[in-house]
Length: 310
Length: 292
Image (cartoon, rainbow over all chains, first blue to last red; front, side, top):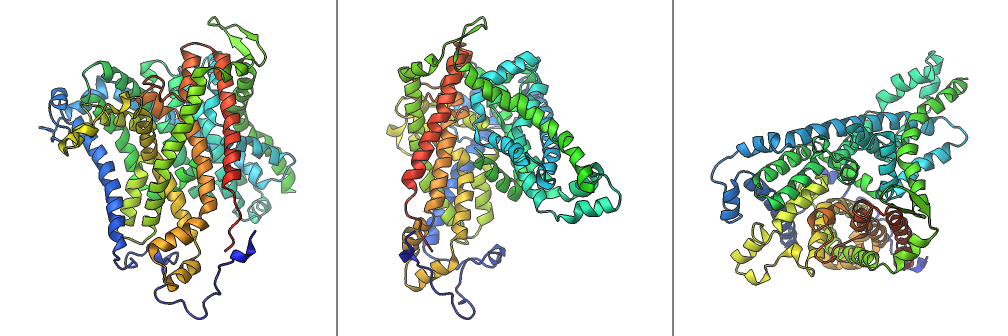
């Protein structure tokens, strides 16, 4: 608007001065760190405090998971556990049902993720690469799912599940999760498929491949990175989901980890068995952190894009 | 000619996904509006009551309290989130040592389940068994120790803090991308003119990132208005309704009082309020475009 605030300087003539900082690409290399400046101390202090509090919280949970209940009540929180009590983990796994929660989480998250990604890939293909009337409308139906808060529909969803006989079943929960993954997956995969060259189908048709074969043999193999990223994001979201598990699942033997741990937490409020709960928390947290450690960049990008959908 | 063949696969390819979306999202969405005009009894029969559920909302102290708390939650959480997130994002763009490690730690809580994080912090806040009070006492600050989640004055900020701790990684990544996109020549010009880092940050970077801030604030409002897991697990709305938000109230109204119609009306009203608030924020924060 106010064009008078045009502060862009004339582009520097000649090569950029050697002090020119933050060039994209070059800043990734390790030797290209900025020379130490005094204000960096403040930065390290700030980030250090964050790291300290986060690591401290996890270390505390791990430490408690190695204590006995009486140790937990009787000692200071930072007292190191007297012994490596892996016993707590096997207690949590079998007698506190964390093993069964874990199995349910794996079953529900994996099947929902596979279903959500496969169906989204099929749906995204015509939307991205076959011009037809109404394709814009169909796409916006999917995108509506990115904009409306899902949570609001929980009452009719509960009733629908009841009518379909899917209430309190892992199948029902997996179908709901798959549906909730769809809009984001379709959105990402449509964008991805549009970047593939337009001649692929023509070439395949010349070679005599039908459209289904073209999709499965030509398009899908090129979709690797796109499919990987929506799979990771869908899986993490399904693994962590709490609200719909709470609404739809009631039997303890069908609960997923977040819901099961919540129930254990409620029980610990009135009981005295804390350490198995802490062991259960570690069992829930460690696999996810491992996935994140291995796939840091993909997870970061994907979850950030996923969070914007709300 | 392969176009004609392609047309035959459009419907079979789209149908399974649309079927799921229809059954588990679109149909419930339409039915939410429908149900919000009815009154349900415990036996499951319903009768049409017009807009009564909506008029009831306006003088329901429970709902108004939940709305007030939702706004407070957004405000208090936003004040905790944005300064810290901006500071961290800026720091991470200073080409410091260990950038990758810091990014890992800042983002790590995001990948954890909200339920587990809420549970973990519920114990950290625990007045005697937790981590915070004994730590304060150990530092000789015992006077600051309190029952964090059991005190109506501290419960809401305490829950908001955990929500921020859990999600801050996302905001840092978004802000950090914003810092990275700033035109290097403008910053360079500032440095040549002798501006210090703080001056550059305050007078050049912040104004240039204004649009990004506006989008992020709207996003934050949309997210916190829908908050559920943290409040539900840590306090379930207590003490004395001081942390009750629309999500938890709606859940209780539906599954403890079985007033499905009223709960649905709360949900629809929440969507409308969210739209209005985000529009207002958009308008207020949208000033003259900055050209650069």
